Image (cartoon, rainbow, N blue to C red):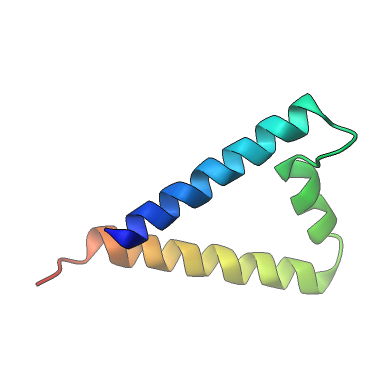
Length: 68
């Protein structure tokens, strides 16, 4: 239950940052721009792939594997 709440908070924070980035483009970067900045370097791409795999694995394990 706590994990689902944390994922929900992260989702809401991401949406809020995106909305702020669209309303104030000079002050807050949108998620697209932030990811593009991170992707410029090879180390940033590696980190993004690892984070994507980590999130995907946790969501897969959380919602597809039956718990006893």
